[in-house]
Length: 242
Image 1 (tube, rainbow, N blue to C red):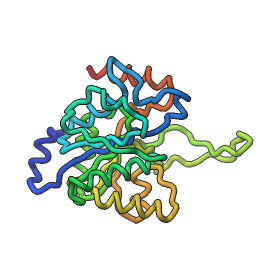
Image 2: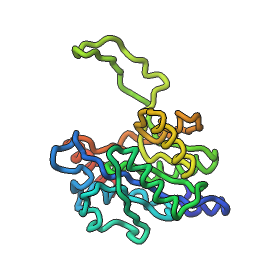
Image 3: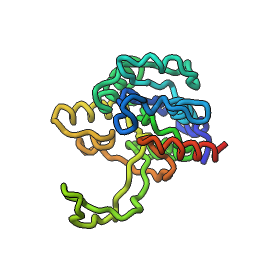
């Protein structure tokens, strides 16, 4: 895979590339008191690793959507700090993303590309980032990283009893980053929210307005920190790449 900057040079009229990182979540499944994005792995916070991974790409800038009482992010040694912007997050992830997109609209063009990446997903591989960007530019469509579902899936009732086995054929597990045109994604999120649609990721909003979304094969080690034991796994993954 070619280097991202060379890739962008192939498309001299290509729009700029920005990133949005929603980081205002409460981390309820991780801990009642600790935010997962600020746990330390190999001397850096999870958030620092996530930002550092994205800076493999030729970003024009990135926006961190933070909680109202978050005064810690500003103290971090974020890579390419000159590209960092901060805005207020929202009650839910989708609200934080939309706030960041509205912030970006003040400096970016609606036709610019924007990556949305989980603050607690520090292990995304450079090769997958290249593939995601390449797919978006070549197809002119939104795209996400995802992996085929490999395990047997069970539908379970309220009493924890299995009701049936779910076919995993054609099922993929969505990851981030997810990439789209800035104006299109903003419109999709606003439309879905106005209609009361549940938005679990950016692709779900794009699907709602029937905008095409390409799937790009990711890696199973692009994990999201959800539980405390995930920190150990993330450390092993990151250590193996050094």
